[in-house]
Length: 56
Image 1 (cartoon, rainbow, N blue to C red):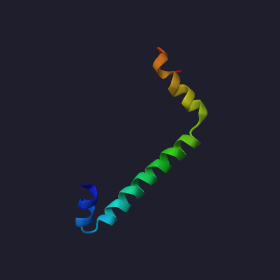
Image 2 (image 1 turned 90 degrees about the vertical axis):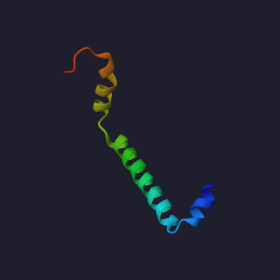
Image 3 (image 1 turned 30 degrees about the horizontal axis):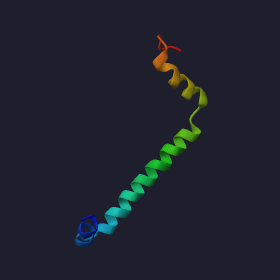
């Protein structure tokens, strides 16, 4: 069914490539964010649900 929809839609390859590129850019940006984030920030965020005060 999906193959029939794509074959009958003019310019479908543009939509497929564009959606793949958006996904890829988003995935790479999230990966870079997680790689370069400060470890102290991760520790502070991971303790937030367990602490009573917000000024830790």
